[in-house]
Length: 252
Image 1: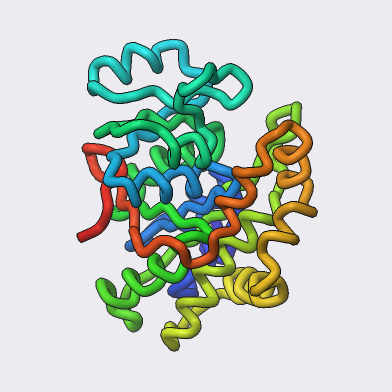
Image 2: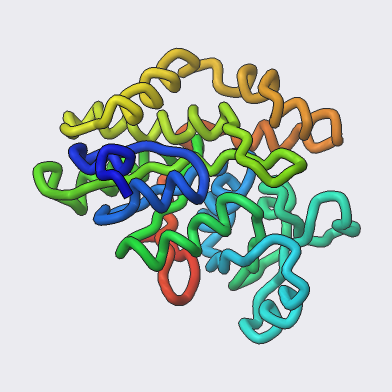
């Protein structure tokens, strides 16, 4: 691939979806995956509760078997969840009973996280809830002069399977990038700097903007307004979920 499209000249990069993530993660030390509504928000809630999260393909037929083999609870789709059943909804995870492991399928954030784990050493899940914590962790654990960071906005999918850039993921990615800039982290690509600026434009008004966004309205109209509220809990979490061969676990 053309190194220009990989933003290879920059230490901090930003792009969209699986294909964009693969491009900018090549040669990176850390990939940060952002899927605000709702994978990475659900991941943040689970990590706060000490739950190990196992990402898994969306609508995989063998997901129940995989969960059983790993002695894990399987999160189901919102629309099919029964009373008391854990779904991919962050609100449902926050009110669920105790569990050690959670299989969390997702067509975007989960799939991207698994894929990038084969390219980079470290994959991190970030949302508006823990964006500052993720940036603090990067600044603490990595050398700004030598490390390369790839921040990936997961986006959503149109009915034909093509990428739909979702503005909430731009804001979530931008929150991480803006926080890195606050650490005087150098080397942001123009794409990364744009995402940081996009977040700064709505900082302090995250919930109202999430509610007004296409993805937020979709959830609210479907009866899942609480998921938007949880997603807008800016800075509520100091937990940094790192993907290992055991699943996502909280960084020490």
